[in-house]
Image 1: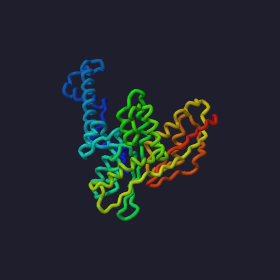
Image 2: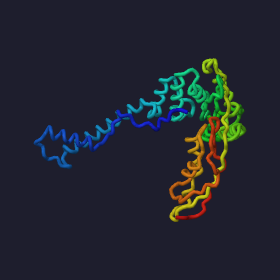
Image 3: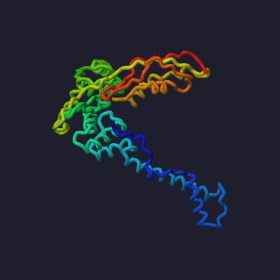
Image 4: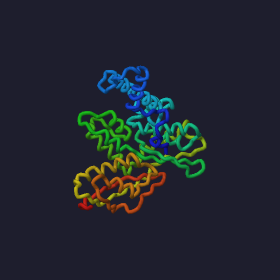
Length: 327
């Protein structure tokens, strides 16, 4: 996995900017330069000018901080990140988020230092197709490389939405990828056909045969595969876990506090989960125990769900029952 940049502190060169500190310094400097000027009350025009100068300096220093942070991979975003990634030979691929582009850039940097390291193959898998959500590279034996793929095509399809009047370029691209004939079709017709191909691959996140073909072709390329490696591209083993919980609320809590819990947990799985990520009981209870909840009785699962390198855990059915109020 790539380095977690979010844990890095602000670099020392990034200055903490305080309006009051700057204003006090300006006022002290003014008093030193003009010791005979004693009318420094809050309503004095000189004070107002010092406040304006202090505010403008705060804005300027903050801009300097932002400009410097934009040159660091941990803080760069948008076009700044695009330019930084381009230095390492990367361009943003379709629908790629800032976090995903940073992840690929890190793997590109790490992988370029070795001949066929895990980071190198992971970078190639993530770059081969924008539908790859995660990739885990392992070596079960000497000269053997196995690349497991976790798909995000279902997420992409849901994000595209539907349009009864036009077949969007993004939807058309997905249709072509999955071999769906779009002649005369509209989004409302194409979407279910594409979804059927995705669903046929297995639980959400399972790589389709089409995706495996696309990524494996890249892996076998002479410019990618190290000559001594035998590379196999496989789908992740996606394990679906049903969640059942009983929840008790505080007496003054509204039952509406439970609204959105399922959506929030599924979104958290998408952002935090992935290959090799364990679904623990404490994680589930923490995310179900929102403000207004007095306690959570987790019925299922009963043990931590441990995932190996080639396994990803997803949520199957999700049932939360309001058992009433307690203190």
